[in-house]
Length: 404
Ligand SMILES: *Cc1c(COP(=O)(O)O)cnc(C)c1O
Image 1 (cartoon, rainbow, N blue to C red):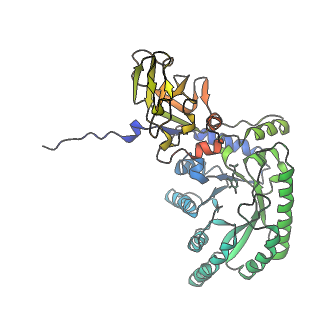
Image 2: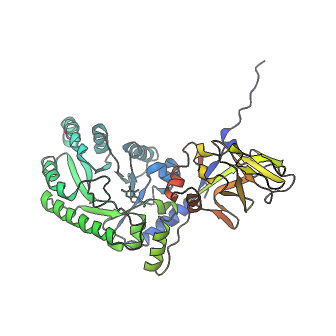
Image 3: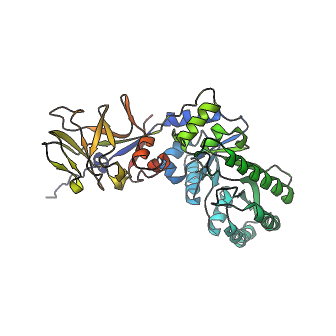
């Protein structure tokens, strides 16, 4: 007789992520209210949608933003696939990161726009030429945004070298259609006075005027540089497109941005965090005073305790720096993490949050429970990093679900 093995569903013994679609929509509307109606609002969904989950966020956001920004062409192709399968209108998609010649051809075919960020793009030409030959009249030029390095020293062309690139673009204007000129800020979220940002804007203006004059084209190029922080605090940065990342997920780019917004705005815009991270306990047990807890015996019970073991650890993106420092919420009460955060486990003091006979609890690792909350900023503070990194590092293997 065949033995029947009961497979335990992995989801039942792992932490999970809950996403609020209504919070995303609220944050999008908040940003729309900050910009003129002719300015195009883009949602940035790089880094697995800031760790929130690419596919889930795509499905929540697609119909509410005007453009979707990604780093890799493969994510752009996923967007086109999703649109096709669901018979949705194609949104504008812009790839911000590096692309290969073969990917450039695919982007041209699928009407995906790309950022031209460095000299490698000259390698696109032979492949695009080949594609044009094959397609004849139905060839659509690759739409491109010239990335100008105005002070971040990351991707993009320096102001001084643009001139030489333009000749090349002019020669190949049947293959590449220049759609816009873009740049990226270096320090808007790190400071409360924005002189460096204004220097960047001046450089972008210069580059834009040069490119417009040299390309001698009969249409207006788009200009864009704004992200979450500058859209709120530097109206001069809005231009044609706002590329909003972190704040569509309900998070402030930094405290400095929040302080600046308080000064600039009569009313501080309200952002609603989209993500909650939860975990069901694996077991609860009593530990008597004097017992060591966790690797390294770094914690010792100072009294009799009830502790819960949770199947979450640094493998899942829960920072090890929260060892003996962070807390999780159980029944609306802050509960300390005892000992070290392990690869797949944490141990939490639930003495105050449970009763003698409690056999199972659900902890909120990030998010709200009753009147208490653990914010991404709080975790970032414990882990000596920024909220961007905290959420982006939440492992892709965890299950995401859209809850409202
Ligand atoms: C990440 C990114 C953004 C979005 O920045 P946020 O601070 O998350 O709003 C915009 N533009 C570029 C080029 C980026 O890399």
